[in-house]
Structure formats: structure tokens, C-alpha cells
Image: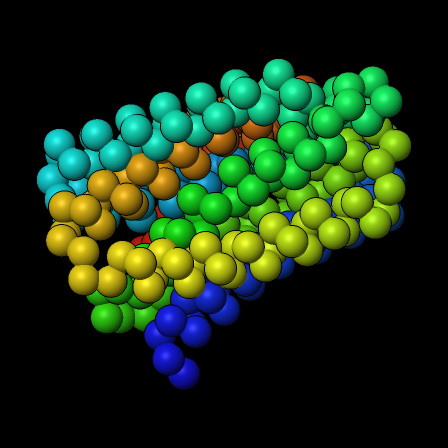
Length: 249
């Protein structure tokens, strides 16, 4: 199978976890404490992947300066876009409770949430595609980490959308679209960055890492802390160690 097609397939696989989580969150009445615990685990998994896969790889490719500038730029870009989206009702897009506004309460919030979901998912998929550029197999740890973290993201967000009165059609068209775009983003990560100098690849990888880290602390950790605050640290460490073990298997 051509590597560009592999890149798109791995991105689609990781993105499909959002749809799985959304189906559980929309149709099942999962206790909020369990959702928060699953979110904490997913946050720990992503934190490990950012630390030991993305940042470490970027540093090895391009050195400290390119890595630092890329990560800071990714965090800044994500935060700036997130601030704009928050003003239009997407601040709590990953919350499972009643924090999400309905379209009647804040017109345009549905579109803002859709854009926010896209903003959360694209950086992860780009690095999945870019991981094939070294000529070896895809970074399985990154794929697994993104997949494991996407399930609680989709679950929590869809549960909140249901409580906000959004329709089944809206929820599943949104997450199906994000899953497909995840595949395209991974494909773009492979095709557009092929032949780029190591410093550029390092900067792009670190850029995605900074955006993911900002996303974790801004959208995943608050949901995890809300209803599982007594155990959230322990559960997050369990997720972190799971991904760490996978990276050294």
C-alpha cells in the first residue's frame, strides 16, 4: 500500500474513535463521574505522547530552538483561536454536563463547536501522517494515544450536545466529518511535508505538540476535574504510564 494512503488510513482510524465515543455519549446515559475518569485517562495518554513522542522527536530532529519555537507557536495559535471560538459558544465543547449553550441560548454556537472540534483534532492527525516521513512504519504510539484520547473526547462532547438539545443528525454529521477530515489531515501531513528540512519537520511536530498540550489543559482537564477530582491525578498518571509503556514496548 502506498505510504500516502497509509497516512490517510491511520489518521482516519484515529479519528474514528471520536465517532465511537460520540455514539456512546449520545445514546447511553454514562455517569458523569465515569466520563470524567475516562477523560482523565485520555489526558494522561496524550500528555505522555506529547512528551515522549512529539517533543522528544522534534528535539532530536531540529534541536532545542526549533522545538521551543514550534511548541510555543502551536500553543499561541490554539489559544488565540480558542478564545475567538469561546466568544461564540464553543468554550465548553468537550463538557458532558449542561455547560454547552443551545442554539436558542447562543445563536451560532453550533457552528463554533464544530470549528472547535476541528481545531482540536487536526494537529494530532498531521503528526500521524508526518511520522511516516522517516521511511519507517507509522508511530503506533501516537496513533494509539490519539485513538484512546479521542474516545472520551467524543463521548463527553456528544453527551453535552445531547443535553443542549442538539439533534442526532447534527452530532453524527459533525463527528463523521471530523473523522474524515482527520484522515485528510494525516494525508496532508505526509504529502505536504515530504522533503522538508529536519528543522522544518521539527518545528511542525513541535507546533502540533504545543497545540495538543494547550488543548489538553483547556478542554480535557476541566472536564476530568469536574466530577472525579479526588481520583483525577491517579487516573491521569495511569493513562500517562500506559502510553509510556507502549512507547518502550
